[in-house]
Amino acid sequence: MEKYCAEVRARSSKREADFVLGRPSSIEDHKAQWQRYLSSADLEKAVESAQVIYDEQVYVWTEGGSVIAANFTLQDGSGDWTLYPDYCFRKNGTTAEISSELRTFFGMMLVLRNWKFDSNGRLLESKERFLDLDTKSPKKPDEEFVDEKTQLYRKVADLPFLPLLAKLNRQP
Image (cartoon, rainbow, N blue to C red; front, side, top):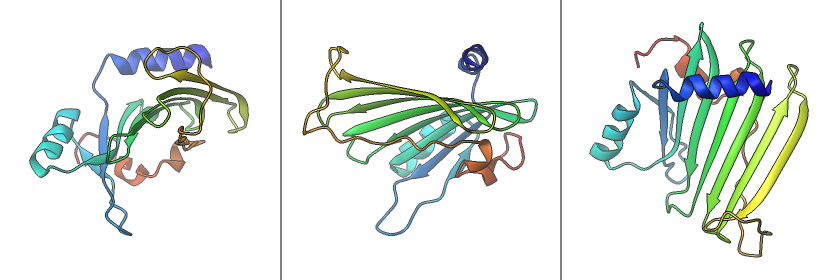
């Protein structure tokens, strides 16, 4: 599993994501909808032209018609924290591994987390490390630290934007 996810990360880092999605900041009780873009450059243009803050962005890679990776960038509107959960999926649609990095000014923390799952979605292993945001040395969370939890999607079918991937092509 580790070797498979390392290979998926290597392949996905060498090419543009097959799907680029963003969800603007929600206003009051209205939950904004996910939107699909042709490329990361198109998403950047949308942000610049509309002057919209996208609290959630995701880059999705596919192989042979199956989602193999989804890398999220989640943040609050003020920029006080950013969460980077990266998902590695097996070809059968189950999650193999999730790696997450939280960078927050609340307590000046860097939190690294990793979860590994079997093909039935059962958690096999989880790890977490708390580090100082500046020095990267181990640090215990203090009273200023505010955690942001990673959503553990156990399979591709659980992804909130799945309908936008219904046609596995690059046309929005």
